[in-house]
Length: 394
Image (cartoon, rainbow, N blue to C red):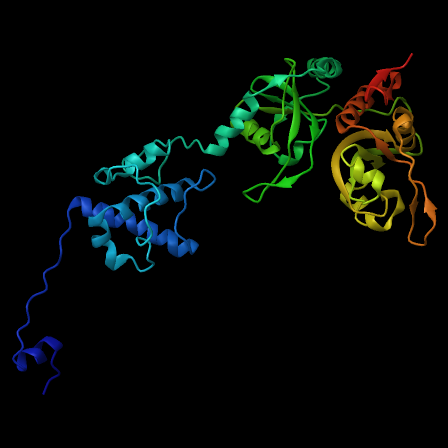
């Protein structure tokens, strides 16, 4: 006897088989199912339900709003129950300030300030102004009067003159690392100078950030975040970084034995727990010169008395060309000699050592000194500890 199918066997047993009627869905129900399937895929790919938050991806935010809508719709919970294998509909809606019958993706996009292109496909978006972008723009725009602008005004005049003479040029902004004390930019149509940078920290998104003091050529300043400036430069089509000028041989037309093709002035902060360092950590800086990478130079800092036998933080780097290291170090010691700290550190063998490159001086003054080293005017200046700034010598 030939093999019978299941239906044929049931028929032989006298069981009536009713035809299974396929369920049909209204266009609205089909949209609800398709929208929920997007949410289920997100849950399976990310091992969590979509969440609200301006720092979230735009599509996750849309799915989170859509899920709230579905949770509030009785018809949706019933319709989607067979598909809800992860229990996504069980939680209460986060936002109950809407009318359930107005479920529509275009409304979700509108609530998030997003305008779609390409019909109803939410995966094709035009302008997506995230909260982080808005905050960055606001930080750049919100400025206050710079009360000590006269200290910085000569620098702005010098930079403008160097731009006019082509000693400096402008380049597209590319890297976060380009934002450092002493760096120059053009943002929102104005020349901006990074005068200070506080300690680097990790923000809520797990990214490194730091609070800056940025001076603008119109005499204003802003205490904005590094990432806000970075975003503003990227969003501004005319945003640029201003390059450093070629320093040339250091105050000499002849190269000497100790001249280097290139070198770096580096500024460090110590993580030492020495009372003098701990009490003035934001002001105590080591100013050194090296022809190798700064990271390599400080790699073994905790074993070297010149670094106070402690780990250090790299605060700033300034790259120069055709420098004479000996002359440059001697010059730095002359300019900041009055602010050199008197400290004694025991080396690994217990012998006392007095490091000579640590100074009690604000970071923005160091940046100004480097600019004056580049243009040669530093020979006329020295650091005045009573005024905490460079002053022209008599």
